[in-house]
Structure formats: structure tokens, C-alpha cells
Image 1 (cartoon, rainbow, N blue to C red):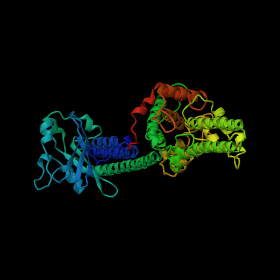
Image 2: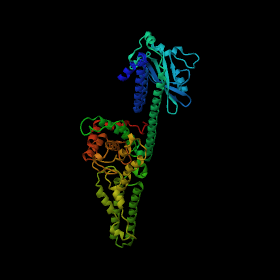
Image 3: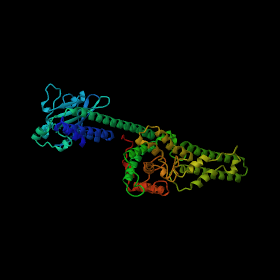
Image 4: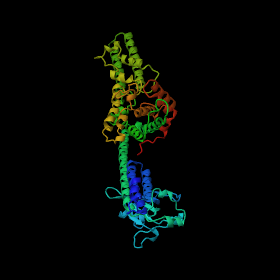
Length: 553
């Protein structure tokens, strides 16, 4: 740059003003390149708007500026006053919406797409359709003079917004670098002496900046629309899950809320085994989607199994009790036949007594089935009671009076179901429910996730994997289970224990839930560090405040 300036200074064709102007143009081009890079990398819409305005003011030496965004309420075009900045004044900022019409300068540019470069807004030709509202100047003791107003057009030529720059502070041939925030306009003399019209070349330069800004804004809007579409898909999926299994309504959202809080707590940890685990914004978004979708595979599980409230299906329990009543009738029938054949009164009395004992046992068995079929804990020795049920039959002394041998009171399938230690599902039914994790992965992996969310399917897939390898569907262990899935597992277990009553269980108090979590961690199934962090932060309290359905992000 110094060699370039020296060569210009040695050339008789350029005076000092020319050299300053060329240097200014060179710096503006460098600004333009930098702005393009910054706009391409910025994703936050609020920061993007502020970046556009700051860069525009910096290039043109403007003392003040505003960004207006074009909106449509279905009937008319509107302008949203999105951001403003004034270097020479500390002014209040309040977002508002106004109709876009040709009477206002910003409205005229928004509707026509024309660039306006006005030397003095107090001296606008009355023939022009637009006018300047002097109310702002009166209210804040300011003097608006020069104004450059540029439309922000997207790649289709649509005007997405307007950049309005006020009071250029660049004297002809003066280096503009830093002029926008270095020179303060304090009084009327400053406005007269320092404020100049915006240079003609700034029109094209700002149109280029505005075009880049419009593309950046549109890209941001497209990203938001895609996220909204993903959210709509996720919300519909959660609704489908809850329609399939109403007893777990709100479960996915509660797990997501607790998991995000636990992941943030892990992210903040500076010591111990979790110190190297980080959850940035994308990782948190991945975890949220995975939590909301982790049970989607249940839509493919038979509803009667999902809603099974007792160890026997209602029909099967009814059949078993009906069979016990049938046995009572067989005993009564056998007793009557024996009594009819017996000539010896004592023998007939023995048959009646034996029949009475058998009927009493069968009546007690019917009540016992009701107790054993409940998933609630019981003090009974279930194995012994089931063995006793299986031994029930028509007494030998009476069975000879029957036409054929009676079937067993209890089938092998019924015995297996009644012997279940926890919950209401037998081994075959539990396998069907456990398949939901694989079904979830099969569904979620078909969604075209963007690269930054590509691990959503895997996180959802692994939410029932346990550190000791006893989980499902793949039996992963240790570090093969993603950190997000380990976080989700802790929250999933807590909610399953603590949530409102379900058909197969009662809600457990927090102290019992905490004890069970620690027992699972001690057994090597859950991550002990995560369990202790979860309990230390009292994240289970988030369950009570979680809404029943998943909100849009």
C-alpha cells in the first residue's frame, strides 16, 4: 500500500485530493470484501442486521442509519423498523411497524426499488412523491441533512429491506476510515461544517453491500423456514407418539427439557471425567430433536402392548378366571356323580368334603390371579403361588367320575406372564416394545438432516443402550454410546419413574427416583457422573414445569 501511494504521489496527474480519494476507494473495496465474508458466516438475524448497518455506516462515513425490513400482512406491504444507530446521540430504540407507502423515503425505496441519494432532505423537490418527516429532528435536537437510501434486493429482485444512511461526514478527498464514529456532531455548526452529501460512488458500492445483505438475510430466513419445517415434523411425530400411547403424554418434551439442562451443565464442567465433553449450539439442537423423537418407533408397536396395564391381557385374565370357574363346575359335577353312585353314606360324605376343599381352593385361586396379575409389588412369593396354581386340578377321587381328564388350570404362557418381576410385560412383549428403538432409527435416519444435525438418528437410536452392554437394540457399552445418548438415558429413566401414574405403575416420589438412579449407576448401567450432576442440579424439578406437548423452536 505504501509503494502504491508513493507511486501516485510521484505522478503529476494526481493531486492530494485525488490520492486521498483513491486510497478511500481502495479501503472501501477492502471493506466490501470483509463485509461479504462476515455476512456469509453470520447466522443470527439480529446480529446480521446490526452488522449490515455498522458496515454501511463505516464505509460511507455516515453519522446515523437505520434498517427497515419489508413484511406483508396479506393485504399490504409493511416496513418494520428493525435497527438504528446514531454516533452523535444516545437515542432510544423501539421497534415498530408502519405501512410502506411512497410518501415516506424508506417506503418509496421499498416499493420502487430505486436508490435515493439526497444532498439535503430539508430541500427535497416538491415534485417528488416522498417527503421528509422533521419530527425526529425536533424531538431530539438533531439535524438530518444528507441521506443515502438503498434497497436490499434478493437474487430474484425482490426488495427485502431498506438501508437508510444519514449525514455523511466525509469532506471531499478526505480519508473516510473511522469517520463514522470518530467525528461527533455536537451543535448546528458541526452539522453545517462536517456533513456533506454522500459520494456518488457510494450508490453502487452500497447497492452491492445491500445485495449481499439481502442474500444473507434470505439465507437466514431459508434456514429458519427449514428449522420450522423440521419442528413441524417433529411436533407431528410427537403428537403421533402420544396419540398411540396417551399415558406417556408430555414424556418426550420433559426428557428434552431435562436433557438440555443436563447437557449445559456438562458443558460448564471444568473438572473430572466430564471436563472434556462439550455441547455447542448445534449439539444441543441435535440432542433436542433426538429427545423429542426418541420414542417415535412406538407407533409401530401394537397398542394393546403399549397400554398393557396388567401382567395378563384383559382377555387372557378373563379367560383364566373363567377357566377356574369351569373347574369349580367340574368339581361340583364330579362330586354329584360320585354321590349318585355311592351306596355308602360315609363315602358320599367324603366326596362332598373333598369337593368343598377343592372349590374353596379354586375360589382362592381366582382372587390370587387378580393379585399376581397386578404389576404393583406384593409380599407374596410369586413363584410359590404360581406353582400352587399350576398344581390345581380336580381331586383324584372325583376325576374318575368325569368323562375326560381336565386341562391344566394355568398354561405355560400365563405362568410366564404372572412371574414377571417388574412392570407388566412378559419376555416376548418386552422384545416387541424394545424394538421401538430400532424402529425410531429406521424412521429418523430417513429424514434429510443437515450436516450440523446429522447425529440425531444415532442419538435417538442409542437412548436405551447401557454402559454395561445390557441395553438395546445393539448392546453397546462404554464410550461406544454417544455422550448425548447417555445424557438422554438418565433423563428418560427419571421421567419413567417420576411421571404421573401410568397404567402399569404409580408415580414414585423424588427421593425414591434418586435412589433408583444411583442403584442403576452403581450397577454400571447409567453414567454415575451424569446421575450425580443431574441430582445435584435438581433437574428432575423441570418435569413439573414442562408443557404437555413440544413447542416449536
